Length: 433
Image 1 (cartoon, rainbow, N blue to C red):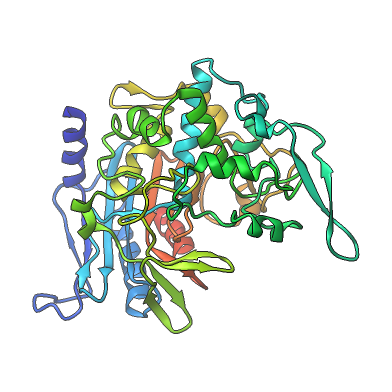
Image 2 (cartoon, helix red, strand yellow):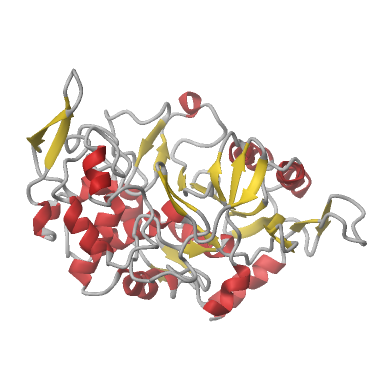
């Protein structure tokens, strides 16, 4: 509790930027800033003001409904901004305690859970997944034919825990030569919140379907971390929700992070918008399945609350997720409590793909992307910075070299033709002294 109070006092001591409400009688300009303490060294508040200006422009242009940014530098919150609307129709402004669906940002927590089990001697990264989930002992792969259709062949080797952590297991989100078979089995896309069955049941069925690629052959983004969540359940004897709560969420004081939203927090849940050529529009509630996957407000408030997706299930806030990232930036420790060993975090944040291509200048560690070449990547950052994002267009990254963590929460699905997240990266780095 003392550690949390210290964190909150540091938060209140930083500069806070808030977008002025359109039409508000007291609004003199589009943006207002309140300085509550001398600006921390190493990060220019004057230059950081460009962040809110840029994000506000996207709101004013109707290209975004808004978002929340939080930047930590050398262990201190140096910049926060809440821009635009949590709910445009209700004229409810975005606030720093707004709760977001973080989708694939869940993967980092599940990956840490797996490495915690490794540190306790309960698994090896080289272990075959079938050691814990027998139905995964032997898998198959769909190989496309030249004239169409595909053949099903045995996997050349067993899928390992490390394959899943690095997304090199050949497991997609149902796409690939055998997509119809995956769709017919009712397993397609990252979304689990509407299911009335545990994730373990779905994972058991998917083991019998043809994978998109041979294990270890290439980077294939998919259900890998959901499978890992089931491994955590099998080894620990707890639900994934219980394990993450006990080992990460509660001790890190991530008070607004959960798989499903308590009713008393409903008024803090952000509305999901779709960014189209006509502007942003609220998506249906709870939404429905389209060919590309589920689109809508989702089942996080009034859903079955049965499936705990380790790959894309959590809700959180910018402040909560910043604490999790700060723990990783500090080598696995925060507020005097160690969550992972320093060498484990070094391994987690090292490129594991080596000769497997991903994108120019980028690799992948044990749970998130890793910048391997600054010039080839072609955007501001540092070699060794790591991060990822979520389906609702949220983003995060950690730059150990600059002692920096950045969280950008927004809620756009689809988010067509938007680039404000990339501009955010440039504006964060230009504010460093």
